Image 1 (cartoon, protein in one colour):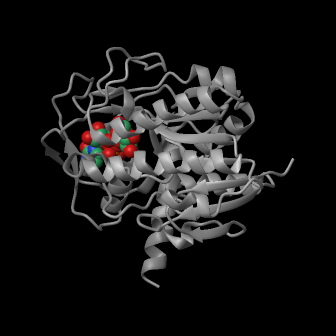
Image 2 (cartoon, helix red, strand yellow):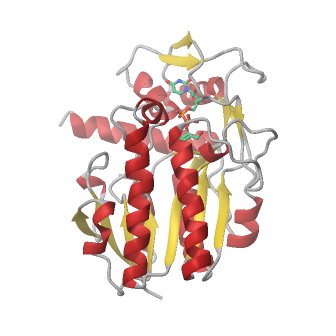
Amino acid sequence: MSNRYLVTGGAGYVGSVVTAHLLAAGHRVTVLDDLSTGFREGVPAGAEFIEGRVQDAARWLDGGYDGVLHFAASSQVGESVTDPAKYWRNNVGGAIELLAAMRAAGVRTLVFSSTAAVYGEPATTPITEDAATAPTNPYGATKLAVDHMITSEAAAHGLAAVSLRYFNVAGAHGAYGERHDPESHLIPLVLRTAQGRRDSISVFGTDYPTPDGTCVRDYIHVDDLAEAHLLALTAARPSEHLICNLGNGNGFSVREVVETARKVTGHEIPETEAPRRAGDPAVLVASADRAREVLGWRPTRTDLSGIIEDAWTFARRQESESTQ
Ligand SMILES: O=c1ccn([C@@H]2O[C@H](COP(=O)(O)OP(=O)(O)O[C@H]3O[C@H](CO)[C@H](O)[C@H](O)[C@H]3O)[C@@H](O)[C@H]2O)c(=O)[nH]1
């Protein structure tokens, strides 16, 4: 069945890949993005594009939409610490207006891009959805606040909602990949070092209580992540707010990521030991059993080399486009 969806933030990394998956499944998609961090060329061909803010969603949303996928948000953990008001305004303020617009238009299905950052420093690992939520930065706090808002909206007004809590999203879908400015994420920075665009990769902290002393994270391919969104749209039920973690359940250390990238790229990738980054938990690994059981999600691109290979293809494509 072909449905019509509004994708907020569809010019950004995850939003663009999910848009590509929705179009490939035969759905009609309108992307709403203010291009504050996304890129116009990141909007897949075939999607209608509106340059605008989520806060103004009411201008465009009408009863002809079958659902909304909400990605538009400020998403840099470090910046959220130095400029928290921006995060409360954009992330929470944006969601308040979006929910009101959906209610007014009678659009009753929502998939929300949440994050592992809501859990903060976990007491046990792997992390299930029942774990305590105690975010250690305003980014995680604002995403958790939106999760709470969605729960109340479902109870009060019958919204059918799913929040997907991402662990470390990586890899690329052809021309759609990770591109932040400034870039702060590990894999893109490691690959820039392989390209000679940086002298070395800084390893933030080598004294964590992990096997090699560096932080362990659960890297998930953006295509596997995107598939979960399509499943969430069909699993959403009126008056229910389903929350699912998305990760592979396998942890890789920073050093393992760098070593794998050396093998994939054939480049040396020098490392520099640097102090711990504030707010980084030692280990973040997901239990995604609920996504498997309730959504029927089956991630297939779980091999770290394959994830880095796709990110590497995208990084080289970006480099050749920027030098043309
Ligand atoms: O130059 C770098 C960059 C990162 N790291 C390390 O690499 C790991 C991964 O860091 P990323 O910045 O790539 O990802 P995070 O785990 O910090 O962030 C991810 O998880 C967060 C929740 O904790 C948020 O959801 C965020 O948006 C998401 O990208 C961390 O241990 C970090 O300290 C380095 O050693 N050097």
